[in-house]
Structure formats: structure tokens, C-alpha cells
Amino acid sequence: MIFAPFILALLGLACGPFIWRATWHKIEKIFFIALTVIGAISVYQYFGNQGITMIYDTLCHEYVPFILLMSSLFMMSHGIHIDIQCQASPIHNTCLLLVGSVIASLVGTSGAALLLIRPFIRMNEFRQNKTHLIIFFIFTVCNMGGCLTPLGDPPLFLGFLKGIPFVWPVKNLWYPFLLTLGLTLMVFYGIDHIFYKKHPPLIAHTDRLSIKIKGSELIIVLMAIMASSFMSNRTIYTLTLLCFVCGSTIYVRFFKKEHFSLLPLYELIRVFLCIFITLIPVTHSDWHSLKPYLSECGQLSASKFFWMCGGLSAVLDNAPTYLLFLDFAGGVDEIQKTPHILTAISLGSVFMGAMTYIGNAPNFMVNSIAKSFHIPMPSFLKYMGWSFAILLPIFMILRMVIF
Image (cartoon, rainbow, N blue to C red):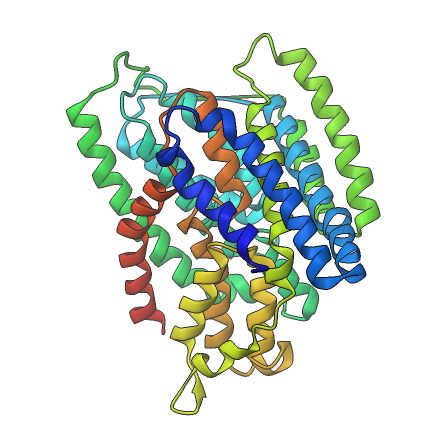
């Protein structure tokens, strides 16, 4: 079965830590490398010489620019040291998630996540329960925050390139954004308040709020990196490679002073190489058989578009999923006559990337960074338990209110 390597990759992420609890960290490298090789061989056997072209195009035009972008952001964000001194109370944590979600629409979810995750962790270094903090950071900053502008998330930028107006997201998605983010932050505040009262910080920070930013000039470079991700491939390679060199210099300068590890980057490179290669047969399959399931009483159903697009975006790359459902809806010109369908596709592809670690690249990176700080993070399946328990009810409310 041509989809078997991709399915095995998902099962490895989900079940590997349970099946080989003691040795998974040792065998996962071999597991994903082997699946990558098997996936490449399967693509060649199924598609023939065209499969070699598919692998080449995927590596050159998708995977390498993606890794360069994430590596540059990872390095550059390390050089920007944001020191937040305040009591790590539920209200302060909630405010940081709110601000981070808004910033994400300006510098992208990847940029905002890598810029704020370390300050967020350091701010809560004396809290005993930290796992839920990272989970909600992924929910909000890494995903929900990217829906207000095309700069926030790749699917919306692809829609902009196809002809959807730049201001369309903020004009049409601000209410779903505020509703979903507001409900999520309310749940977060309640959970964080319970943990805060049950296990107060071991050492209290000062009650006065103090924010210091070192390397603030690099924020401009960080924004340039994000801008490069929306340009031609040659420009992407040039700018991100330049920024990667700058980031490496910063690493040499700061690594003795700051908590830093390249392990999250190694893990991202390894796992997503496997995902990109094994995903080739999925993205090149004919999914038009789904069309009949997207209509109700002879008309396109916004609710079905929301759930089906979101469901695929949780396990596949949300950018091609977004384009696929735009095609189902009749293309950019036709879908602008039915803005509720475009709203459903946009929200599904952006919001539901939070349902799994691989639904959006920042999810996986933030998870790896948190583990490098020795924060116990849930496994793939346990994380889905959190997302299903918290986000599904919120998405159901969103669907009833919006659609």
C-alpha cells in the first residue's frame, strides 16, 4: 500500500513511546530514517521516473526551504533575549498568550512561537506544573494567532497569491478569532488558576512587571526571514542561508550564557524529512471523491468544509489542503461569492493544525524546545487527548455560532 510509510510514521509518533517506552529515544532515529528510505523507494516503484522528479521537487522546493526557514528562525530567536520579570500568575500567563497570538498575525506563527517560547518558559521557571502552559501555547500562539493576515499562516498567504484580498482575513475572521481565542484563554485561565493554587511557585518573582529586550535589532532580521518565506525559492535560499549564518554567529556568542540546545532542530530535521517524503503519495492522490460529502441539500456545506478541511490539516500539510478545498469550492473567483465557505476553509486549515504535534511546524518545534528545558511533555496520543478534550468543544461552539 502506497500510503503505508506515511501511516507508519504517524503510528510511530503516536505509539512508539508507549510500545518501546524505555528505548524509543534510541530507536526513533533509525525508525524515521528507515521509513524515509522505504517511502522514497515506494514513490519510485509506484510512480516510476516521475516519482524521482516528485522527490526532487519536494526536497528542493518544499523541504529544504522549510528547514532553512525554521533553522534561521530557531537561531535568530535565540539571539533575541526577552527577559520578563513578574509573578507567573494565571493572569500574566493569559496576557502573554493573548499578546503572542496577536503578534503571530504580524510575524507568522513560527516567528512568534520561537520568539516567545523561551521567555514564557523562563517566566514560569519556578512553577511546578508547566506542561499545560506549553500545550496552551501551542493552541494559541502556534495556531490560532495566524488567522488575521496572510502573513500569519502559509495557507492564507497562498490564498492571497491566488487572488484573495490581503485584508480579507482580518475583515472576515476577526470575530471567529476573538471567539475561539477568548474561549481557549478562559479555559486556560481556569486550569492555570487551579494548578497555581494547588502548587504555588517554589520561588516567587517580583510583583512588579519588568520587560527587558536584548538584541531587539534582530527583530527586524526576524521579520526579514519571515518575509523571505513568501518570496521565490532563490530568494528564500539566499536570505535564509544568510540569516542562518548570522544565527550561528549569535549562537557562538551566546551559548555559554543562555540555555541552548540544537537537539530540537535535529529532531525537526529528521522527523519532517520522513513526513515530507512519505506524504508525496498522499498529496498526489486524487481526492475529488470527497466532493459529494461536502454538500448538503444540493449546496456546499460550510460546516462540512470546516470539519473535513480541519481534519486533514491536523495530519497533513495545511497549505495544500487549503488549496485542495478551494478547488472543491470552485476556485478563488467562485468562492468569493460564498464567503462563508472560504471562512470555513480558512478556519479549518489554520485552527485545527493545533490538534496534533505535526499539524503545524511550530507545534513540533515548541514541543522539542520544552523538552530541552526538561518540561515533561505528553506523547503524541496524550497531546491529542488534551486537544480533543479542550479544542473540540470550542470548535463545536464556533461551528454553531459562525456556520
